[in-house]
Image (cartoon, rainbow over the protein chains, first blue to last red):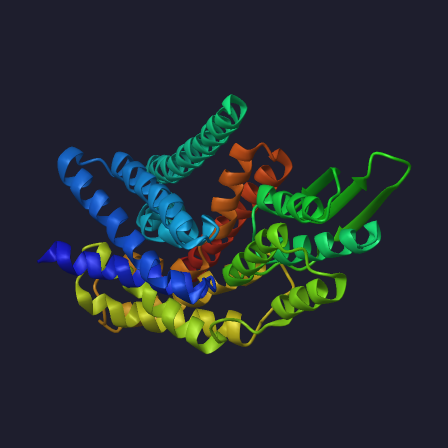
Length: 153
Length: 252
């Protein structure tokens, strides 16, 4: 039951942020789907390994994959899906805790949670980069294969 | 047949539209090259940075032309990016003449946004406060998060307070969201101040700069990658500072 309400929330959240970034109307449904896929990945991996950094990484990989696939289906830029898709994974609470510790003067805890925040953000960035690079090399591979076929003919 | 000057005008205009609306560097360069090649120009060099576009074309013989476009204002509209994307792909099969191409680009450039500002503010506040559900907090926190987010966005987006300045609006947004959520928290509405505050400033998170910076970095556009990465970092820090000021002043 809890996972169901969370999935609905992820759907709504990614969809509304897509609207905030003025995404095309035809992409909205698939945007919501990106949110559902990435959050279910986050939920499952968090229950399996109980590590927010790894789960964020897996969920962002799913966002990137969904973005690449949906962008090809609808002939839209990949960023339409990725920009809104990573919003639910943003390490807000970790950043908040960092800030709060810093205000209170507890710098050691502040640095601890700060490193957590940076690691989560880095995991998201790394995932997007890996999927982007993979999509790029796939495109080149397809292009080369096409060129080879033409050369054989 | 178009003159090289006209081809450059079309390419520079298309590039300017998508760059000002938040496209990545490689997409802008791709679009420019594609448009020039659609009109039969063989040698195209384009250098795009977040603040300017430089294009130079060469037909292999004596002729070469260069154009520079400076980018001052940047906003965000993914619809326009996809429209220009479609436009440039359409040119490959069907090269339009100068007048039609420029009219089409002007239509895209001056078309009003897909969603009005009120819709955007309302829906993105709602989308931010739904974060409460994802963070496993009690559902009571949704109401103060929604109100705080609405307050911050109304001041920054609707009234357009300090719109021309970088980073200061985010700081003020963090401050306003902090004050409103602290007020409701102290009145007993909502039980987790952190989640309320984070959910309410979520619409200001620099998702675009972050994503574009990463995608530029893997594309090899290092200038844009570092500058956009710095922008994302500074925006985040300004939000945190704004929130920290409000909490630091009123929490004791």
